[in-house]
Length: 558
Image (cartoon, rainbow, N blue to C red; front, top):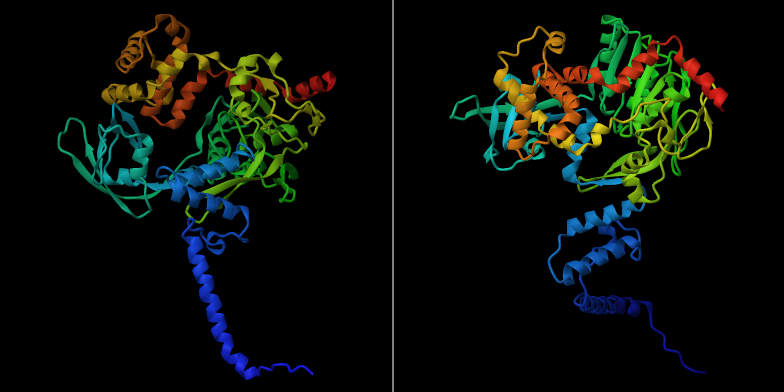
């Protein structure tokens, strides 16, 4: 019988720690040798990856190789940002990456306020000039006046160094309660005045104007749907209804890029007396259908409504127009809207940046998606130019839906989706907006008009805006002053082109002068006097029952 060696449990327990140590040291030596042959890769736990062979590790490994071996120095953060943007471009045009530097400005626009000193300014010949301190803001309380030149912020001289508007805002904005020291030159003074101003919350208005177009028709201009838009809208609506006797309403959503969905649906609820009327619904692969319906708690009675849209009206603007059109509550006037029917949700990233990711599509009450195709991103970006060249913006006969699938409004009218909200009543684009001379000359109007008003304020005394509208004329002398100012800044005179754009330039200049003399609403009140869409809206609302007539025509045509 063969003898078998027997090792007692006690002896094995003595040798096991030694064997384990030998294996551990050998593993460390092998690891050190392998490590010396390649750049270090952050561990999966540290980098947030779940498995060591995942795609995240591959990207991290790639970056390590580039950092260790590439022929020249690279900016790692810039590479990462580019990679993220490249990934998102494969999804859709509206999923986006927002850097930490950009995030505050983006959020300010949507939040409806920012923390700063509260001044409206322009950059005039490389000098930051205060147009007006905002009423009740910190700058006004500190004694800053219209016309003051901001030449210093803290220890930085900002006059004459090519600073941009964005650069000025970065210097003046800051956390609420923090202080900033600014240096100002006033009038002909040569000594700098210094103000130490405590920053505070400054409102950013999204309702730019609200006034009466005639004795019964109100007008409200909404420039975006921010966190305060519904509140602003209701304040203006109360004034128009209770104090001005408004019965009908024109809502101007032209060039409104959208914003918060909830703000749009809150406003829509105030335009319906009934409860539980569908306004819009959203649905996505990972998001269940979510219906947004009227509350039945409208505070003011409004009879007829007209909504103005154009090729710049997008997202939440299209939700408002689509809901009112599908429920036969308003006349949609203008041109086909932008065609953005995707819903984004914003997610904060660990480094202070953010991801704005498309999670759903929204659908109007009739069930149509108005998102235009985006498979060809280059074509998507050039859509407006294509509309212009095709003649769609100038002629109703060229206005065709991108998707001919019929959908039906509450009364049975046929409407179409697949590329924006189609207007009920078409108004062509003023071709002046594509005139190169007009667009170059108009760029000089804000600075010129400010200078004009600031040097003649004492003589420009009017007993209110109505007197200004009646009595102030942009005559040939004033127009020549504008042309001279533009020529000083690089725009050569063009008599032939001026003849084509003269009346539009005169109206725009008058509107800008009204803004500086009065307020933002004054700009729109003056500018809208010759506005084709507003004239069409008034004509439509003054008819006895135009929507019924339009419905009957559509029903007979289809």
